[in-house]
Image 1 (cartoon, rainbow, N blue to C red):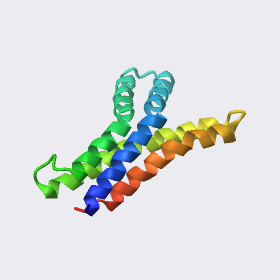
Image 2 (image 1 turned 30 degrees about the vertical axis):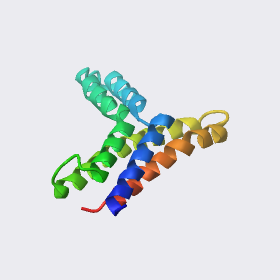
Image 3 (image 1 turned 135 degrees about the horizontal axis):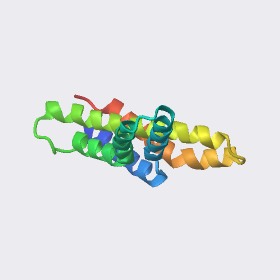
Length: 140
């Protein structure tokens, strides 16, 4: 198994763990959008944040797709395959990371913050780390 196949497997496993843990960031983007629309009164902002929430909700799936592209032969030209896969992993993991950070900040304000924190970051955090490692290991 070459380096890119390993990186692809890391991304696929990481994306699956992100999906299981619900690390998407979609709710976070909707909440931010609602706040900004209420604050500014600019209703078109809601549509922008709906698009961001849609992308965020697909975070784990986007990471999995990036892993498949890096590991497999979905794109015939090798020199284009890895950068496209890395870009997809970056988008999926980035939205997931933003969502996880905001979610963790909200958890810290709760009563049983330590228990909630450990439960929330275990699977989702591992998935994000695997996704980031996959992106770093993939070679053009």
